[in-house]
Length: 158
Image 1 (cartoon, rainbow, N blue to C red):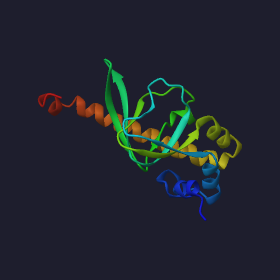
Image 2: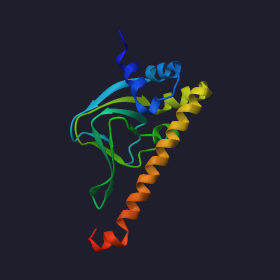
Image 3: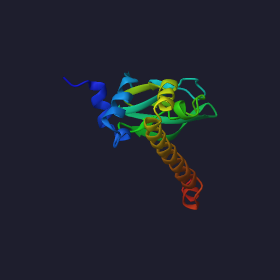
Image 4: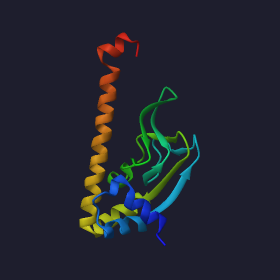
């Protein structure tokens, strides 16, 4: 019988190209979590140190402005959430709210970072992937800022 966590790790886009051993290592650090629609996964500034591989559902990344949430990005099954827990070890920069029921694998950021230090081959592959996530998020933010401040958006009243 196949371990469902290992199976989920092996089929997530984040792990494509990892060795079976690296997938098994990652699976050993994972726990399955689920969130109901509108559940707050974490809030901006929270000291939660979890990294997630989203399996299904959609999550809004939001920042609070004038007491109201402003959606910055929408994530879905196949995406990653909470990269800062592994790379920075700091509080969250955004809040994450489930837009619909969410199934995910959660990893303690400290434990994952420790495993990356202990096995540098594994660590290189994980960090390389995490930097890809950071790059994608920066590009998404860049495009959103450009969209908000473009002459066309201003004429449309955005």
